[in-house]
Image (cartoon, rainbow, N blue to C red):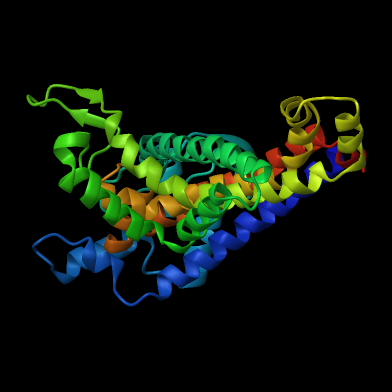
Length: 358
């Protein structure tokens, strides 16, 4: 099991390298000049040259890419004769010098995601630390809604197979999988945040934290979480219900379940003690995949509801060609996918000992 997890980790590092490489070259091939978008109202050639020199736009794309990888790597190489080393000495990031060879020095540091182009030199790591918790709250709430309702309705659909209830749940599941999240977000915001506002008291837009009327402090506004969490949870919910139903029906056909019935155990005890745990394997796979997807899928939902999370930050960065923010947030999302997949392997080992010993 440990060897398998180690392989997963290595593959994860390779995946992250691929994500960074593809994103870097795609973003820098998009028409438009990021340096021009960073100019103020003066817009003179000297200022443009200064911006290009500051952010390395005057170098070849390959050189820019290698420098970015050098910043991103925990172990990086720096030439003592370059401006990069000068900025390093001035506090570009905290580091520990390992050793020097001639004009080069090797340092150990945290991965450096650079600074935003449009937020007054604000570090990308700081932007992520401010927005990721909001996205995590939204994603966790959404997946919890999908898990609880999905497993419950999946079990009921299996127990009442081919009844009106089962058919109704199946139709709702298909409907939920078919509707794009951005359309659901617009629909829910309009119906529950505008048309039925006086009954629901829900807002069309709003984030987890709101500022009081005097602008003197922030307070948590949990009601703003309801609509985006429901919208984001619709699609995983629609996937979990049929998966739980089909998996449970398959388990209930096993010989050991027939033996349990022959011993006089009630349906409730059979499901709780014997069938449910074994039926959860495909559901765990779906949950893990969808939870990671929610971090990426929250982009449009957050933007529509005005939720100040990672997704909304990505949209703003795309509009402003803020490449460090786009790549940095994408690295975090990709890392979440990898960590969740590794965690799922551990859960599999707990649910099914045969996987642990294979």
